[in-house]
Amino acid sequence: MELRVLRYFWTVATVGTVSAAAEKLFITQPTLSRQIKDLELELDTQLFIRDGKHLVLTEDGQFLKIKAEEILQLASNTERVFSDRKKEELTGHLTIGALEGLTTVKIAQTLQNLTNIYPNFTFTILSGNADDIKYKLDNGLVDIAFLIEPASTEKYNVERLDVVEQWVLLTHEDSELAELEYITPEILRKQRLIISERSEVREYFADWMGCKVSDLNIVGGFNLGFHIFEMSRAGIGEVVVTEGALIRNYPDLKTIPLRPEVYTHSLLVWKKNIPLTPATKAFIKEYLKEE
Image (tube, helix red, strand yellow):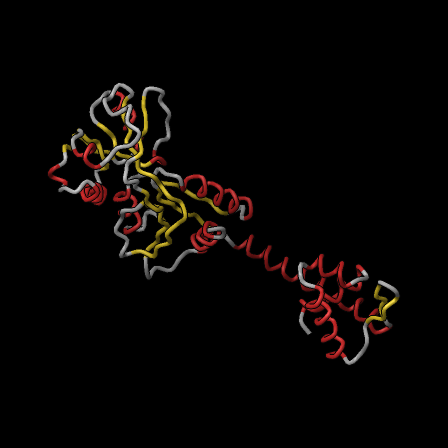
């Protein structure tokens, strides 16, 4: 006898009709009727008699309802005990390495859920560019990391997330490019560029522009987006950046999409062949729950 079937029986016995019980249980009436019939065959007894539109419990049915309530309550209490034990047992500290980007919102939501459920769970978030974060991950300074493509990930377990970043050009409103609706590779190739210092990003965009990195007029690089706004306002160069890194809004700066459009996915990564701590497992499970 399964708990599920006992719950079906108890619901029918409580509400008095198969149709109302099926609606409450979110299953079809034929399925519920079949389950009750199978239960009667299993117990070799009649559990209900029909009285007009309603079902009335037989003597055996009344006995089973009492026992079903006891069993279902015991099962519920047992599940709650184990749930409470898990809440109490999950302690520890999680260190996350994260880029500036759109994953920040989901990271915060996940940490909110975990800290609400597990009072002894604590965390630290370390920022940096992908090379910084991967160095910390390789050397055990962070437990898990959030990266943005392009990124070499051969050494890691990788979850490619639904979080998508669009690359844009950040320019001053007085720039000759400010009136353009989009930026093509031909246009970008002629500009003084400020772009991520990471070789993977520079090679990616050189390929997008159909040239070599050495052919580009790169006047500066950056590892975090904090400084790019003042560099753009100063007219030093045109900044190639993801929208997620644009944490500030200056009225004298403008973002222009690239065309062909460039979209990249965010990645959740952790080292291969390394046992995960309970805190790390809990975070990964919670973060990916709705992915």
